Image 1: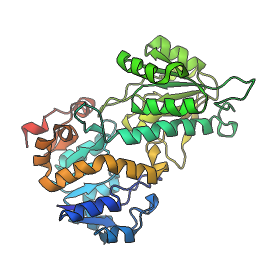
Image 2 (image 1 turned 180 degrees about the vertical axis):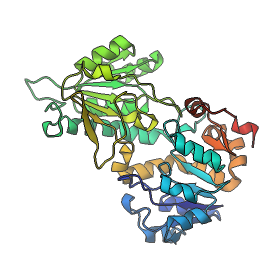
Image 3 (image 1 turned 60 degrees about the vertical axis):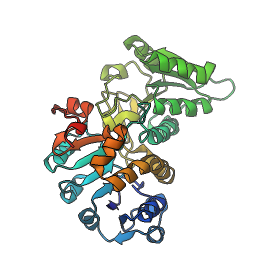
Length: 370
């Protein structure tokens, strides 16, 4: 198969879809790999490293898209890249289609074989290609939240860990999945007071066993959310519905209950965000203030640490890319039902239930049409 990767165009997105090690593995099995010039520089991978691994360096993204049967990216294509995609091409990347109907419609109209990292499942039903970025985003959320609590950014001017004789900062984490768990780890490491809410009692029991008295766990109800928001200095939104829109658990009216200068970090912004007042921001302009509350809603948080993120992501995604390269998408999804769950669009049809529900499409099981 001919595989290609291009430079990411999203604001301050320095990750890259393939590492030189990935390229070496593909070319070692007889596949051809095109890499756009400079695609890996942001993550610390030079064109020379890609050449040594067997890649062909292309001067433009247009050349890569024109040659490749499978495009491996990190983030969803920008509108200027839509023109390069062609019918039957495999697009393997994070897609987050539920809040992006324009992208979904383009992929349907062009009959792209769109495989989303974020909806691939493993044998246990977990999300292996989302996990590493959730781990990074969870840890970053506390790091960024601590920074924007500083007074110069509009925050409360509070040190999360406190000092002797001064109360520690209070962090509320809504959602106890991977991102929420790693946010809790980072928060405990900073000696903050942590409350974590979730609707899954089994998950709360698990987290209680892990963290013990280091955090408080609460069942996520309207009353508990309101109470926790009133007390919080930093709120982490880490709710996930795979492929679907995130429910708005923090409503605009809740902001009036919160402390002035408190910070919200909405990790779920890629899927629409779990705060009604959230809208996507960039690393260039990461925060805005609404009702006196600082909002951090950067849609590609792990892009700030591209070396770590790229290697962690490729560790998770590469085996699926190789399965498709060796066998073709159709055979690959029959061999791995978890990969089939990653196919969001195929032959002009929506093949993910949550995406279909969010955007009003008819759902078709990809295994019924290949």
